[in-house]
Length: 472
Image 1 (cartoon, rainbow, N blue to C red):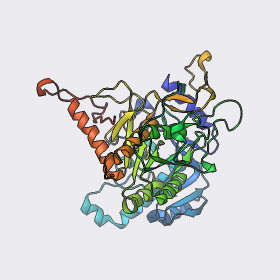
Image 2 (cartoon, rainbow, N blue to C red):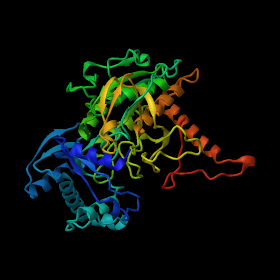
Image 3 (spheres, rainbow, N blue to C red):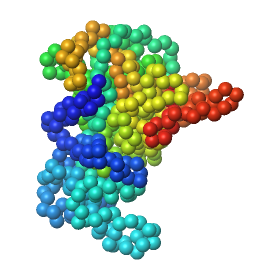
Image 4 (cartoon, helix red, strand yellow):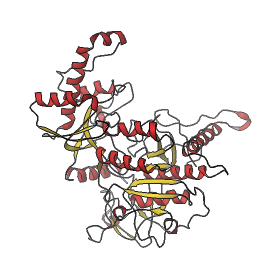
């Protein structure tokens, strides 16, 4: 598979997608000038045109700035915590968000010059600087300071540069159903594309999998005889979890519709609903980027609530498939357990698979290559332009496939945590079980560095030198 050609094909798809715009920063050749934090902005960020998210503390300032710029806007949506979604008469939201940031920061620095001098803060940036790249660099150096205004960014099912899994499904032979009751009683919420109702050959999904009519996914919604793009992603993810924890109870929460995008506001709403249901674990096989490189503004209050009101819930998320070390979200969020991918042949010490994101923000790695689990039957048309014409379609006679991506590493770790929760007579909390799973991965890495007679063997690391801890 030519990842570059496939990426271009997928970007073309999103350029044609109604209601989405791409923010495509500096070309790869210019990425030598990285920030001290190791960030780059090469990968494109997807966002909804005409929408801006603004934190409560900055809302009135932002509205004042927009008025001063003669930009029409309407503040229709405000959360109880004060996060506002502004509908703005502009499609160039990234540049407009920077104008708001620059103006607000500049005003506040003027008002609190004494405080600035005492704590040694650097000025936010040059408001006269019209070069968006330079302004983003300046923002990157100040990521310790929360972003106040941003586009309403989009997320897709664990993307390569924002637009899809690491590869496309390949027909596979049936696998035997898992045995045992590991994870019995553990409640797991899967926020994804939904689930198929034809599970006659997937007995591990026939019991204790809860969903409503709106959570059901159809593999061929437009009835053209072709399986839809990324259809079955959530079904596959649920199958992996139940394979690792056969006794767990899964709650399907459909948010994507056959591989399309969702945005921050929608993800925030769904996460709020799921937190109300109080599961033990939440699996997020989805990811995206922000144009500024920092945490999504729209999810900030969700993580605050998770820490203050639902501290026992564990959120597991896939790290993304761009093969880079800068943060992808929500995996890079400190409150989230982020998972990268290794292949089946990776014995410890292991290397991350070339498509897997990596870095100090990736907590653990797990199998994410040629994973076989529940899918559907029918014909699939591949998008990869590198494939010869004779290999552009595949027929799935069995409802199983082999698929790769960090999307499928995350649910394996989710299942391992669920199984660990019930591995003793006194059940463990999800938080404690996750700590033990991570600790075991760390211990295995250390053990791999000990050779015969106690000699030290260099343990391979990711390209940036960060450690690779594999959950088996």
